[in-house]
Image (cartoon, rainbow, N blue to C red; front, side, top):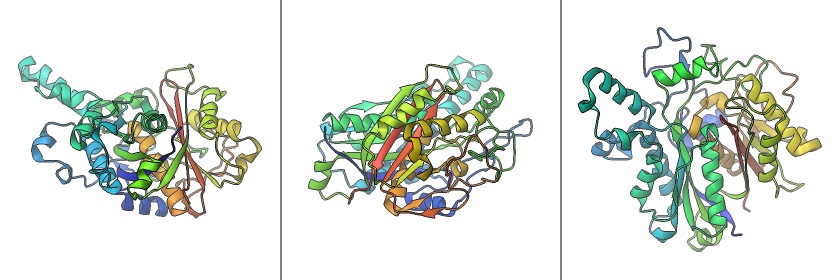
Length: 407
């Protein structure tokens, strides 16, 4: 098996549209949640979300491309553009050995709503000819591959809330097995819209607490549901020797990946945490006794997820668990759905690279069933040598990816 490293990062998020801004926001515990601006919430129970702010797609693509793409693809291209530039990979790789593993939990949801309204109000002849290519969820991966002449493996991942983590993990496996020299991996989502908020509210997934500072509060006893977010994250993963040979900057090494399914329920996690703990254990196989560990938890702020994930971490690490630093950056970004795992993998890499633990902000009231070190409210400076990012998705999808500091 070949070694795999991270050589580029890119982010579009509710707390920053560049890696530097994202890092500073994590370090300072910035809250990206606010009242929804993208549609009128007068008749909605839920009125808050973690929206991307000040996003200008023309910085990353021409006006014609903007018109022909859904917002989730625009976010994806923007994150990939940053990661590719950061890695300096272009011109230093065989296009046939350059791949894309990039996904979305939902795809072009806003385009679907717009064109459905066109159909009902104006007739079938007025449905846009760009409807299908704007809506289908594989188009983020396809557009990225086209933009960067990546002619190697191109796979669109959709494992609900675990999408970003699955994409990074499967890209790691592909490079480790020799199928590519580098892969742009990640996930994107743009689903802060009328239909998504109504649907998630009615399936009792979203919190109805319309106070941005007390809504997304992972592991807190007052938690009552997640806050929907949006954005995109991209990582350039590269075979170690290939990266070294071209003098690439290396953020961290990818050292493990676990992927399982609860096979239990369409939305609720298995309360025994059998599958989720195995995904974490599989990713952590090469963690050393002397590693200083950080776990970026899925931490959605839902009653079931947080206690189940706490149990999963305990099962995976045993007596060592109380020495591990944990946090949920969803306390700041909300739940970015298919983009969450990618953004949180980036946060994990930054934790290693910048020697700090991002906080779980808004934490006030301890829950006896969630009794680990969740890094409440303030970032902590710490020399992290290994980090894991875990995700638990609707449908029972579990994924976890592990990173190590490269000396």
